[in-house]
Structure formats: structure tokens, C-alpha cells
Image (cartoon, rainbow, N blue to C red; front, top):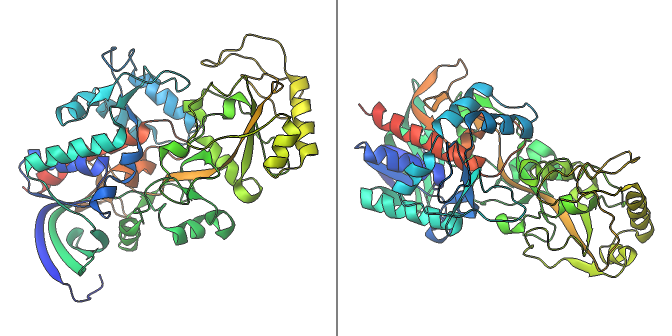
Length: 469
């Protein structure tokens, strides 16, 4: 560790690095078990919560309906959903462990201040599987902080952990940066819950290449720089996951480069067609219900020229999805709309005419797989394939928005970070997005990140407190 002069040197029992759902779950659990807990939040207080402040819901195993879930969601069904969205690229042992530990976790959350609301209606299809936070992720984070304060958890804001010292498998010191300078914290146990590296543009370029890395919009918090991930890698930690995989979705092309959050997401893809900058379709827009497949579209866009796509829908479909925070482009013909969106009108018109000719009569059902598919196209549309023929016509540009990366520290079921020889570090634990690659290798489904954070955060907090004894 850099031996630069520290402006402060302090000790801690359990040091939690991070300020989101996983970190606070760990902090509350460790404190409830009697440990003195210090939380390091890299952001200022007004931006606290990491990616969790942008969330809306969580998903977990439960046996029956309640006030905020419309029916049961079995452990096997969750696993099959994970298997489907990852196309088999998941760790079955850890996924099943996560699911088992998630059982009725909503009750634990409620006991610590979370409030759920009846699930949203519409095209999200989540009323049975996902519990929605009343007031969203920010309300959840605020509630957890209130509980942390009541329990006596200490929080340091504007405090970024940048390096650590490890001796014989034990973390003996963590170097941090604060506005007044650098300091040293000497913990007895450490929980690393500080997210992926999506806020580190240089690392994105390194992983993806500059052509793509510079074009990725960071949908999540800009405070996740990957410092602890990098430091642990340099000190012999084992990693899992592909650095070019992550929770990546199609978001409005007009979104900010960082911290756009959930409001930038577009849910319109299933109800129209999506073309690249040359006016050509490149994937089946009707492959699967949106919550199970929306996360593949960000990665699909990275393979397109300039990492951009364009969605075309007509007036029959404009009210079938959650409205965007941005006003859609609009015109009375598809050619006019293409011109507004700076595309070749002739190419777009030809694509839409071919698509319309390939549609067939059937019963359209926007809320379920309806089998209303095209015939004869090289790239079919498997469901919701209606002609785009009713003006006015609407369009959106879409770009890949990355929420968090899947390159992770390898952990065991006690969330102990593993060394290269598969022996655990003695007092270092990891949770949340920094551990997500232990479960999923690609793809995503709504609410799963919060499940990973809550389950592994609780375990990490318990194990860190136990390690003190």
C-alpha cells in the first residue's frame, strides 16, 4: 500500500466499504450482532446509496400472495428464470444458494424500515415475482440509514477507499481519500460492497476497447470506480466473471453520460421494430416478455455501428409501455420520421414495408407471449408483430446503458473473498454488485441485483461480526 503520509489514522471493528443496499444490509446485520460498524460512502450525502437509489424493486422466493405480491414464486421458478436470462451462463450452486437464502427476505427488509407498494400494472409483468419499494430506491436507502442511525452505525461520506494492506491473508489497513486528504483505517474485519467498475471510464476502454468504451452510457452511479476490485486483484484475490459483461440495457440515446438512472430506460422495443444506423433490423424484438429480455438489448447495441439503434412504433403502440422521460420523435410518415432521426428514409421505409408484409393476422396480447409472429423474414419477430401502419409514427434512439459490471471478487457461501489458491482471506468479505459474477455471467432480470445485495450483504455482515470473536 502507498505509504503516503496520512492526515488521520483510526481503527474500526467492522469496516463496510460502500453505501448501497448490500453495504447497509451488512452494516445493520453486523451492528445487530454487537459489532461496532463504520460505513465508508464515496459520495456526498445527497447522492448516497450507489445504484440502489435508482432501483424500484427486488425479487425473492415466497410461498404465497401478500399485500404487495400477487402470488407465489418458487425457488425452482426463480432458478429457471435465471437460467433463461443468462442462457445458462450462471453458477448453479451459488444461484440456488442465493435463491434459498432469499426466501421471504421482504419480511427482513420491512423490519428495518422498507415499505412496499402494490406492484405496478402494465407491461412490467412483475406483480407476482417482484416487490416494489414505496418511494423507490431512494426511500429504501433513507429508511436503512434511519435504522443505521438508531443502531449506532457510523457513516463517513465523501470517503473513497482506494487501497488496502494485507498481511498473511488478513486486511490490516485500508487507505482512504477524503476532501481534507488521505487517511488510514485499521479494521478487524472488512466488507467490500462498493460495486463494479462502470464509473471508471479508463477501465471501460481497457475492457471494451475505446470504440465501444467511450460510447457506453453509465446508467448507474459514477462513484463505482472499481478501486477495491483492482486492489484486491493486485493482492492475489481470485476473480470470476467477464469484464465485458454486466447489467446493460437499452436506454434513450439522449440520456446523460453518467447517473441517468432508471428513468432513462425504454420499454418500447417489443411493440415495434429496432434498426441500426443503416435502417436494418438486427434482432428479434419479440423474443420474450420484456422483464426477462430487456437486459440483452444493451449488449446487442454494442455490436451495432456507433453503438446505436432506432425504435419505430406507431400510434397503436404508443400507450402500451411506460412513458419515457424524453419526448419521442414524431412524424406522419415513417420516411419523415427517419429523416428527423437522421436515417436514410428509403432504407427505413423499405425495412418497414418488408416487415409489414411479413405480419399475419392474430390475437394481439401486449401482456403475454401471443405468438403473433412474422413469416418469411431472415430475422423474425416472434411475438407482438403488428404492422407499423397507423400514423402518427413515433421513434426513439437507443444506446447501451451500463448499470454495473460482472467482473467480481470470487466468494464462498460465507461471502469470504477467495485467494488464487481457493483459500479465503481471513477477514475480508464481499457482497452486492462486487459479487454479482458469482451468480450470473451474462444477462439480467429486474430486481435480481437487489436480491444479490440483500442476501450476500446480510451474510457478509454476520460473518464479519463473527470473525471478531
